[in-house]
Length: 379
Ligand code: GLU
Image (cartoon, rainbow, N blue to C red; front, side):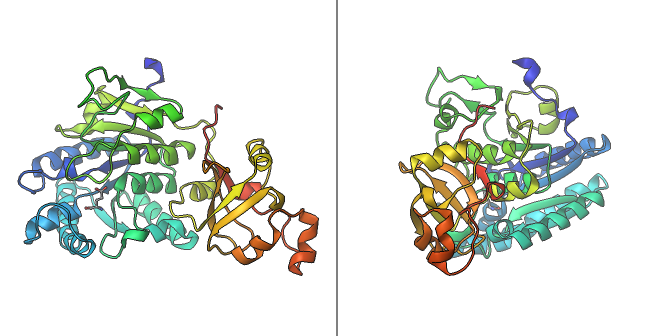
């Protein structure tokens, strides 16, 4: 098993996600400035080795609420948006100052879910991030909480970080958290819980191990970390969950601190399929009959004949989820028909499409090239 554990030294492009609970002291609500400087020292150390580093940092809401009279406990959406507007300034400044001390430059990027779900903003964001990395700058990314409403929001930076990591084809994503990895059961409540140093495949058993443990400051529990790992590894980005609380947390990982590595797939999906696979807010659901599920698993496209029912309001080219009749997710893809036309042709043979719709549409409801399987694959 030990030989499987990747080395930080072998990773060239690294994304580091820092959770609120790691960055902000829970009691005082203040930034852990001394700790942050040791993290930045580690980043300078990685950059001296020729690596590219990007940070995804939480903490805007936690810092912002400290500076105002917002109540403790749950905040209303507009209160957390206001807190983020205030806290993001101090957050960005803290990174810029700490990086400046080691002669590095910070560049701030605030993303919404829409920026990563829509193709054009996605490509724009990717181009900006790549340019920053080329310039040797350390991008500091957070969700643009001030405009993200509850329906169109990541809400946790674990999945945002995975999306950003795959967007720039990172080799590795490090989630610095308040837990040192994945356990067979929640370690706080179960003394028999065993730590898993390497996860090669995210099986249904692995998913079941992820309870929803979380601290008072953090949004993402283990469930969102596993969701992040699924996005990352399929795209060729390894992911590690490590405890970030101590000083110099990246050197600690390099020196063999306890952590969990999720291994990247050897044959990652293409850049375009990465975008499709990472979509969090599909516009609709297509339910497949058993024959269509089998066809998809053997590498075929989805034909209208294999569709049993539809949900949602989607247009041509929108991302949709494909589910079996029990509701289990099979794949994600870009649909070739809008909902109105799709309703008319489902259950029909492809050669009937022209007669039904009055125009020559595509034979496939979703072409293989526009689809990524979500189910656990053994190879
Ligand atoms: N974007 C949020 C913030 O900066 C944090 C989300 C999370 O904790 O994952 O406060």
